[in-house]
Structure formats: structure tokens, C-alpha cells
Image 1 (tube, rainbow, N blue to C red):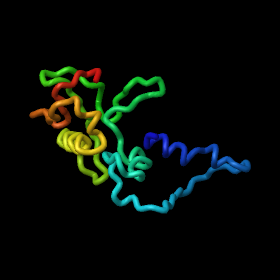
Image 2 (cartoon, rainbow, N blue to C red):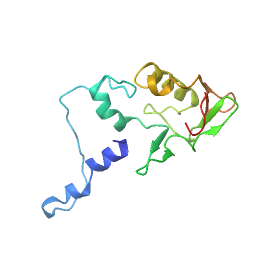
Image 3 (cartoon, rainbow, N blue to C red):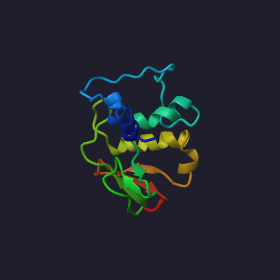
Amino acid sequence: MSRRAFIASALSTGVARALSRKPYGGILRFELPLSLDGIDPHSAEDPASALFAPAIADPLFAVDATGRPYPALAASLPEPSAAGARVVLRPGLVTAGGAALAARDVVASLERARRGGGRATLAAYGAFRAVHGAPLAVDVEGATPDA
């Protein structure tokens, strides 16, 4: 479940209109019987990460209801490059810590995913490299834009 879908379902006005009451605002808080301190969106073994990572981390690309990919954090779908395929981030994105999201962050995340839960998916690709002179672009060696 994507982060937006999770939040939309949690804040659904249909639930708030139960018993003919009208929503008027407020704060919604959840308490879980487990710790989320070590949640890792790249982990394949942690049940908490499997359940809650989509609520705290966005993907570069997502898939719509018809199965077609669309850019989420990326500015557009991948483009062909000399190395394989190039992914460019949307400008103005920031991390949860308030720092600007850059290509080096994407490279670090993809490498971390390759060592963890994304091992099988990312094994077909070569190195991930930030493009010199383009702080928001990442080249994926051996990839095609369709892949």
C-alpha cells in the first residue's frame, strides 16, 4: 500500500461521517504494539518494514491501477543514456531531515537495496552512478528505459 493510499484510508471522510456526524478536524494518532525505530524500507526480513515502509518512503517510480509505471520521485520515466538508462529526480525534493534529495542519495539507496531486499530485482543491472554536472541524474549501467 502506498503512503498516500495509507493516509487516505486512515483519514477517510466515510469513516468520519459514521452515525451522521460531520468531520470538523482534529488529530489522528495511532499506537502500535511494536517499535518502528529500526524500520528499513530495504529490508526483506522485517515484518514492520514490510507493513509500514510504504507509509514513510516513496519509490522513484510507482505503478498505477492498470499496471503502467509513472514517475513518483523521478521527473519523468527513464531515458536512454550511453551507460544504459538515466533517471532524473524532480527538483526541490527534500528528505525527512530537511536536506535536498540528490542523485548521491538515490545511488546510496539503490546500493543499500541491492545488499538487502532488492537483491533479486537489482541483480540484472550494473553500477549506479551519479551523473557529473547533473546533481539530480543517475545512470544505471546495463538497464534499458523499459526495464
